[in-house]
View 1 (spheres, protein in one colour):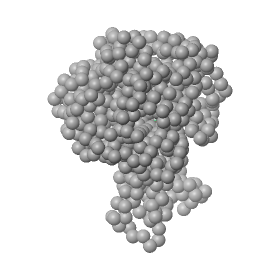
View 2 (cartoon, rainbow, N blue to C red; view 1 turned 45 degrees about the vertical axis):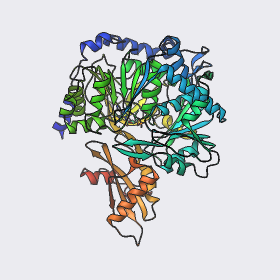
View 3 (cartoon, protein in one colour; view 1 turned 90 degrees about the vertical axis):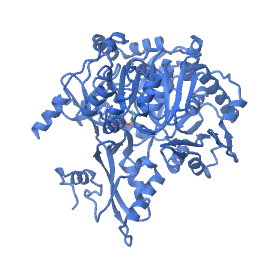
View 4 (cartoon, helix red, strand yellow; view 1 turned 30 degrees about the horizontal axis):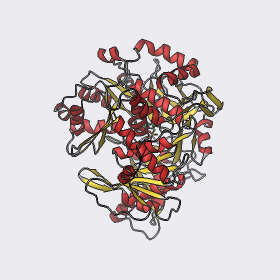
Length: 633
Ligand code: WT7
């Protein structure tokens, strides 16, 4: 045991100095980090005011940078702006109309290039179209689309007129989509007919049909038909591209208050019901802009590729709003990482001379498995910065990424953050020395610490809870319809923001994230609540009780295993197991389907009737069961 731990500590204490060329061109030099960080936390209002002034365009200046009573803060009080103005108009006004905003490609190698000017044109047309359909400031619009430019246009069109978007990842099922549409009472749903993944068409429109059935408040469904489609629209439905054609490309950006809501995005928590995380405009625009610029050290002519789907927060912040606000060119890829072959991503980096590449540990581990001969076929020398997000990047994967993708000539940033935080919270900036396996240092203005349950900082290299001690501009403002769930983040280890992750901090202040402390799983970088999966399982007619755990998985980080008690008279058969898995897929979507289901006679419970998942987990992994004095049986 002792040697294992020492070995791990040794491994994660290696220090990697970023290559000289990265440091040379960086906005922030390594020796500036500490003093700038100090400045940012000593006087956050002054710090953020300066960035807000230097980096963004405001229709009206704010009266106060931060106000409000803990934990309900407002940022840039009475400041007026529109995030789409910062993302589009501003660049066009400065003569960059013809700069590319997106290079869209897919598994067939098709290519569509969209300039900032063209993007603004499309966004305004759709914004006018939405207005004509009666969508007003404050209304909600649900978006359920694949990774295509129309999805970006849909998000920005909402923001242009002050409507809130609620994007639902395309991997979610019709019933998960329906729940999100209902919760937000979306007036309009925007979708596309299908996506293609691994050569197969996946239908989106069908899920939407099912999701909006008998929801009278959904007034219109806007459908983006794709090449080769000749779909006949029925009642309530409107053609996306026709709508764009019909409406004018001029639509002034609505003047929004800094604290007006921008979007809702649902994320899993510890209960069966996902929470609708609400972000507001000013702080979010500022923080995503600044982190995009500094953490990826992006300069105007950089080609940047974030592989996330816009349906997740990474897509919102670092594929749409952040990079557009900074004004770079992004790659938008619709497809799987290994189709038509495991070299497809590297071929894209080669073809478009990508400089900054942001992806996830689950993908990196997949590529490790395929081996380095795939990246070796391509010229990846354009790369300067590599980024990772979603789950811990283990030292082996860090080193592989660094060596075989980055040719030991790139900086690597492991960015820890959450849907709730809006943007990067813990990460070393590219010019700063990194330690493989550790996300590293807090970003400017972020006061991160590792504490025990009483809120006291733990000793170096001791496991504790990751907390954020001071508010930051892009924190969630509330949970849609459920303000009490917002309070929970702040009153569990009061007065700090509790992230829900376990972590350690070393002598140099580097934070290492160990994984979730609560009943939330991270499967292929997707956050899934055990309670969500359990409630999907027990909604199957044959299932009486269910408990779900995460098991370490080589590629996915965690895989889901469910333990089931089946109802009397039900037969434990392979067919039943398949049927239950299909049921979970229908209820939640493919991302939540357990890899394993085991039928058991009983589940370990406390005397008060709570399922002790940690006992199941320890048994499953052959570990010490620990304290079971509260166990009923
Ligand atoms: C959870 C948040 C933020 C975008 C993607 C996920 C885990 C995220 C890291 C990282 C270790 C990470 C945490 C966190 N996580 N980034 N760099 N190292 N863990 O967003 O769905 O809101 O999930 O993802 O467990 O709490 P999300």
